[in-house]
Length: 281
Ligand SMILES: C[S@@+](CC[C@H](N)C(=O)[O-])C[C@H]1O[C@@H](n2cnc3c(N)ncnc32)[C@H](O)[C@@H]1O
Image (cartoon, rainbow, N blue to C red; front, side, top):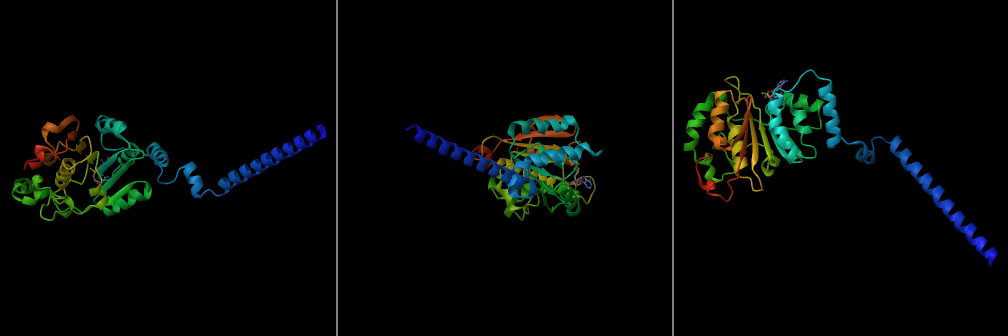
């Protein structure tokens, strides 16, 4: 009986020893595979892949820590969208224009969707080369700054610009203020925040921000999800930005102004009496 107990004890000990040594070898092999194969998808999930928000955050810190070029918006202006993003991120953030601020906007929305719409293909390529984790799309505008006054006076007589008709931006050929050439994903996404700091609007042949403002207003009115759309417009010291903001984004929706930036919270018009109104405000 005693001998049998001893034999059983030895067998059990040997079993645990084999399991223990086997486990150690397996762990060692696993770790060395990770260390040797730095490009493996497995290590990416630990160390942060290109599209991983943590990777973008680190690249962004490195970028701003080693650059003398800073975004054009002041800290007080930036804080208006920063405060909302701190509450709503991860969310859907649409930004008109790529600039020195792009990595910053992207980093403020970790794990969310941030898409930049850029008019200048060369500049788009340059920025994406330096920051491939950003999502930038080329956008071709159909307007010119010189047309701003005429478009503002005539859009009310163009039925396809009438917000009560519910014409999707995508199919809208006749209303020149409608951005009808965006990637499908932009139409299919409900945007929580829209930042309008482009296209260029400071020389006659520039596209101007008229279509960006009109289209942001249409997107916000058509929102089906809860909450409104936060729309930020920069350069409101300029006549066209200011006039178009008052026409399409509306004084009553203005939350705050800081420096040259206005912040609007646009309520959805879906299933409300506003949906039948021909006026935006
Ligand atoms: C008013 S800027 C937006 C600037 C942005 N808020 C910033 O802080 O950099 C609008 C447009 O100018 C152009 N742009 C901005 N920065 C540029 C740069 N460093 N070089 C060339 N073009 C630039 C892009 O076409 C962009 O969409």
